[in-house]
Image (cartoon, rainbow, N blue to C red; front, side):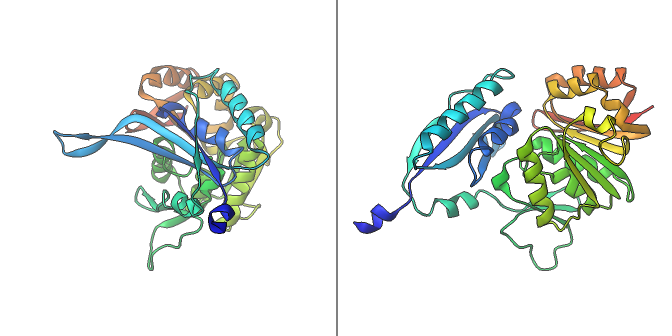
Length: 311
């Protein structure tokens, strides 16, 4: 009897939605759920192909400790979700009490090594690579919930980065989230990366993941902000040979309105991800008006990503 009373109780918070808003949802929940957020793509069995295929829907979930701060955290989550719902409709979260003392082990089982492209391997912070692993290891703490390599937008941007990046390039990462793109760029030979985000928690996440990957502050210049801060001279340079942005399409378009193209050197490359296929036309129109032309396109499920050249 005493054993069951000693168990820590947790409350699962779960939201089922479409893939477009999944990473933004994970970011919001991650502000309040210190132990991590899980993003899972839902699948259904196709009797014709005999394979499980994505439905386009995802579940975003995490666990809150049942203590005196629980109700305050729930209210804060719902307030943050309300603000996010002004961009895209969001279902109400489902709350389920969990009494399993070992839930943390089950949570970690959601995360496995993710091979990406020809040379990258995203590895949860607590796992070790197999002996003789030849890929560039990117260690990520999924508890920070800002981009772990599981979402198609992150996968696509990393694949483009692998194809486009040349050793010695200077890079700018706008909306760095977990820092996974910045870390990957440095692992593959970038000379210097400026990483910015408007969310203070994203900066904390990027800093933690940079430390996990033994990235020095001289190689990764990190700061809170966006296009305005870069162009105002708050960082060592205002332009780079390669600029990457993995963010929702409406925000991408607004970034062009704020002068995104000015951060890319003439004849430089801009990587754009976070675009649903039905948003492609609007994003490419904004890019074309800013002086860019498409040099490569990748797609995954309903998502598309582009490499564009300036000039």
